[in-house]
Length: 220
Image (cartoon, rainbow, N blue to C red; front, side, top):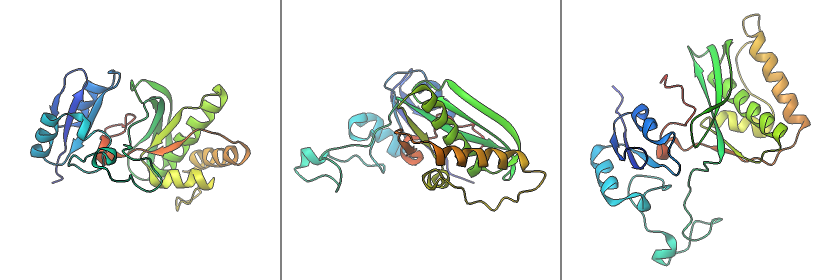
Protein backbone atom coordinates (compact mmCIF):
# COMPACT_ATOMS: atom_id res chain seq x y z
CA UNK A 1 0.00 0.00 0.00
CA UNK A 2 1.44 3.36 -1.04
CA UNK A 3 2.25 5.81 1.72
CA UNK A 4 0.16 8.96 1.82
CA UNK A 5 1.54 12.47 1.95
CA UNK A 6 0.82 15.24 4.42
CA UNK A 7 0.11 18.68 2.99
CA UNK A 8 0.98 21.77 5.01
CA UNK A 9 -0.93 24.93 4.13
CA UNK A 10 0.71 27.96 5.70
CA UNK A 11 -1.18 30.56 3.69
CA UNK A 12 -4.60 29.66 2.27
CA UNK A 13 -8.30 29.64 3.02
CA UNK A 14 -7.79 27.50 6.14
CA UNK A 15 -4.14 26.97 7.12
CA UNK A 16 -3.37 23.58 8.60
CA UNK A 17 -2.20 20.06 7.81
CA UNK A 18 -4.16 17.93 5.33
CA UNK A 19 -3.85 14.29 4.39
CA UNK A 20 -4.99 14.48 0.77
CA UNK A 21 -4.19 16.69 -2.22
CA UNK A 22 -7.92 17.25 -2.79
CA UNK A 23 -8.30 18.78 0.70
CA UNK A 24 -5.18 20.89 0.18
CA UNK A 25 -6.48 22.15 -3.18
CA UNK A 26 -9.65 23.41 -1.53
CA UNK A 27 -7.55 25.67 0.68
CA UNK A 28 -5.14 27.03 -1.96
CA UNK A 29 -6.88 27.09 -5.36
CA UNK A 30 -8.50 30.50 -4.92
CA UNK A 31 -6.09 32.02 -2.41
CA UNK A 32 -3.69 34.60 -3.80
CA UNK A 33 -0.14 33.97 -2.60
CA UNK A 34 -1.00 30.56 -1.17
CA UNK A 35 1.95 28.77 0.39
CA UNK A 36 1.88 25.02 0.84
CA UNK A 37 4.06 21.94 0.55
CA UNK A 38 3.88 18.14 0.75
CA UNK A 39 5.78 16.11 3.34
CA UNK A 40 6.36 12.38 3.67
CA UNK A 41 5.48 12.07 7.37
CA UNK A 42 3.14 13.79 9.81
CA UNK A 43 6.05 14.60 12.11
CA UNK A 44 7.81 16.52 9.32
CA UNK A 45 4.56 18.29 8.43
CA UNK A 46 3.90 19.32 12.04
CA UNK A 47 7.46 20.60 12.43
CA UNK A 48 7.18 22.59 9.20
CA UNK A 49 3.78 24.03 10.07
CA UNK A 50 5.01 25.17 13.48
CA UNK A 51 8.19 26.69 12.03
CA UNK A 52 6.39 28.68 9.33
CA UNK A 53 6.77 28.83 5.57
CA UNK A 54 9.95 30.92 5.33
CA UNK A 55 12.25 28.01 6.06
CA UNK A 56 10.50 25.62 3.68
CA UNK A 57 8.66 27.37 0.87
CA UNK A 58 10.40 26.57 -2.45
CA UNK A 59 13.08 24.40 -0.82
CA UNK A 60 13.78 20.88 -2.06
CA UNK A 61 13.65 18.16 0.58
CA UNK A 62 11.84 18.28 3.90
CA UNK A 63 14.21 19.94 6.33
CA UNK A 64 14.44 23.71 6.55
CA UNK A 65 17.62 25.27 5.21
CA UNK A 66 19.23 28.60 5.89
CA UNK A 67 19.45 30.89 2.92
CA UNK A 68 22.96 31.10 1.50
CA UNK A 69 22.97 34.86 2.00
CA UNK A 70 22.21 34.38 5.70
CA UNK A 71 24.82 31.68 6.23
CA UNK A 72 27.52 33.55 4.34
CA UNK A 73 27.92 30.76 1.79
CA UNK A 74 27.65 31.10 -1.96
CA UNK A 75 24.53 29.94 -3.70
CA UNK A 76 24.36 27.03 -6.12
CA UNK A 77 26.43 27.55 -9.23
CA UNK A 78 24.40 29.52 -11.79
CA UNK A 79 22.01 31.00 -9.22
CA UNK A 80 22.31 34.07 -7.00
CA UNK A 81 23.08 33.63 -3.27
CA UNK A 82 19.99 32.94 -1.22
CA UNK A 83 17.74 32.21 -4.23
CA UNK A 84 14.76 29.89 -3.71
CA UNK A 85 12.75 28.11 -6.37
CA UNK A 86 9.18 29.27 -6.02
CA UNK A 87 6.05 28.62 -8.04
CA UNK A 88 5.42 31.19 -10.74
CA UNK A 89 1.70 31.70 -10.23
CA UNK A 90 1.43 33.93 -13.29
CA UNK A 91 1.40 30.83 -15.48
CA UNK A 92 -0.63 28.02 -17.02
CA UNK A 93 -0.41 24.47 -15.64
CA UNK A 94 -1.34 21.50 -17.82
CA UNK A 95 -2.10 17.89 -17.08
CA UNK A 96 -3.60 14.77 -18.60
CA UNK A 97 -6.34 12.42 -17.51
CA UNK A 98 -6.24 8.84 -18.88
CA UNK A 99 -8.33 5.70 -18.52
CA UNK A 100 -5.61 3.14 -19.11
CA UNK A 101 -2.22 3.78 -20.69
CA UNK A 102 -2.78 3.52 -23.60
CA UNK A 103 -6.43 4.45 -23.42
CA UNK A 104 -8.79 7.41 -23.78
CA UNK A 105 -6.94 10.69 -23.18
CA UNK A 106 -8.05 14.17 -22.19
CA UNK A 107 -6.05 17.18 -21.12
CA UNK A 108 -6.58 20.68 -19.79
CA UNK A 109 -4.76 23.89 -19.01
CA UNK A 110 -5.60 25.88 -15.90
CA UNK A 111 -4.62 29.13 -14.27
CA UNK A 112 -1.92 28.14 -11.77
CA UNK A 113 -3.09 30.69 -9.22
CA UNK A 114 -6.82 29.99 -9.24
CA UNK A 115 -7.17 26.55 -10.81
CA UNK A 116 -9.78 27.88 -13.26
CA UNK A 117 -9.86 26.00 -16.58
CA UNK A 118 -8.48 27.94 -19.56
CA UNK A 119 -8.80 25.20 -22.19
CA UNK A 120 -9.56 21.48 -22.39
CA UNK A 121 -9.49 18.77 -25.03
CA UNK A 122 -10.89 15.28 -25.23
CA UNK A 123 -11.56 12.61 -24.65
CA UNK A 124 -9.34 11.44 -27.51
CA UNK A 125 -10.14 7.81 -28.31
CA UNK A 126 -6.72 6.28 -27.65
CA UNK A 127 -3.35 7.62 -26.63
CA UNK A 128 -0.79 7.68 -23.84
CA UNK A 129 -0.18 9.92 -20.87
CA UNK A 130 3.03 11.40 -22.29
CA UNK A 131 1.50 12.09 -25.70
CA UNK A 132 -1.38 13.87 -23.99
CA UNK A 133 1.07 15.93 -21.92
CA UNK A 134 2.95 16.91 -25.08
CA UNK A 135 -0.27 18.03 -26.76
CA UNK A 136 -1.29 20.00 -23.67
CA UNK A 137 2.00 21.91 -23.58
CA UNK A 138 1.86 22.76 -27.29
CA UNK A 139 -1.80 23.75 -26.96
CA UNK A 140 -0.80 26.14 -24.17
CA UNK A 141 2.07 27.53 -26.25
CA UNK A 142 -0.20 28.12 -29.26
CA UNK A 143 -2.88 29.69 -27.04
CA UNK A 144 -0.43 32.11 -25.43
CA UNK A 145 1.26 32.85 -28.77
CA UNK A 146 -2.09 33.88 -30.24
CA UNK A 147 -2.65 36.25 -27.32
CA UNK A 148 0.89 37.62 -27.35
CA UNK A 149 1.12 36.42 -23.74
CA UNK A 150 4.51 35.68 -22.14
CA UNK A 151 3.24 33.57 -19.24
CA UNK A 152 5.16 30.41 -18.31
CA UNK A 153 3.80 26.88 -18.64
CA UNK A 154 4.13 24.05 -16.11
CA UNK A 155 3.98 20.32 -16.83
CA UNK A 156 4.89 17.41 -14.56
CA UNK A 157 5.96 15.18 -17.48
CA UNK A 158 9.73 15.09 -18.04
CA UNK A 159 9.26 13.16 -21.32
CA UNK A 160 6.80 15.67 -22.74
CA UNK A 161 9.06 18.57 -21.80
CA UNK A 162 11.95 16.87 -23.59
CA UNK A 163 9.83 16.25 -26.68
CA UNK A 164 8.74 19.89 -26.81
CA UNK A 165 12.37 20.95 -26.67
CA UNK A 166 13.26 18.49 -29.44
CA UNK A 167 10.10 19.43 -31.41
CA UNK A 168 9.39 15.74 -31.92
CA UNK A 169 7.88 12.92 -29.88
CA UNK A 170 9.40 9.48 -29.37
CA UNK A 171 6.59 7.04 -28.69
CA UNK A 172 6.02 3.33 -29.28
CA UNK A 173 2.25 3.82 -29.66
CA UNK A 174 1.36 2.19 -33.01
CA UNK A 175 -0.15 4.25 -35.82
CA UNK A 176 -3.32 2.35 -36.66
CA UNK A 177 -7.04 2.97 -37.00
CA UNK A 178 -7.49 3.18 -33.22
CA UNK A 179 -4.84 5.90 -32.78
CA UNK A 180 -5.51 8.02 -35.88
CA UNK A 181 -6.95 10.92 -33.90
CA UNK A 182 -4.07 11.40 -31.49
CA UNK A 183 -1.39 10.93 -34.16
CA UNK A 184 -3.03 13.58 -36.35
CA UNK A 185 -2.93 15.96 -33.38
CA UNK A 186 0.72 15.05 -32.67
CA UNK A 187 1.69 15.70 -36.29
CA UNK A 188 0.01 19.12 -36.15
CA UNK A 189 1.67 19.95 -32.83
CA UNK A 190 5.13 19.02 -34.13
CA UNK A 191 4.54 21.14 -37.22
CA UNK A 192 3.53 24.09 -35.03
CA UNK A 193 6.74 23.80 -33.03
CA UNK A 194 8.83 23.71 -36.20
CA UNK A 195 7.20 26.81 -37.65
CA UNK A 196 6.81 29.04 -34.60
CA UNK A 197 9.05 30.64 -32.02
CA UNK A 198 8.07 31.56 -28.48
CA UNK A 199 9.59 33.24 -25.44
CA UNK A 200 7.45 31.44 -22.85
CA UNK A 201 9.27 29.34 -20.27
CA UNK A 202 8.17 25.70 -20.27
CA UNK A 203 8.91 24.44 -16.77
CA UNK A 204 8.88 21.21 -14.77
CA UNK A 205 6.32 21.17 -11.96
CA UNK A 206 8.11 19.95 -8.81
CA UNK A 207 5.52 17.51 -7.50
CA UNK A 208 7.65 16.31 -4.60
CA UNK A 209 7.99 19.80 -3.17
CA UNK A 210 4.74 21.43 -4.26
CA UNK A 211 2.19 18.62 -4.34
CA UNK A 212 0.13 17.67 -7.39
CA UNK A 213 -0.01 20.12 -10.27
CA UNK A 214 -3.05 22.43 -10.27
CA UNK A 215 -4.45 20.81 -13.44
CA UNK A 216 -4.36 17.31 -11.89
CA UNK A 217 -7.35 15.08 -12.68
CA UNK A 218 -7.01 13.17 -9.40
CA UNK A 219 -7.00 9.74 -11.04
CA UNK A 220 -3.80 8.32 -9.52
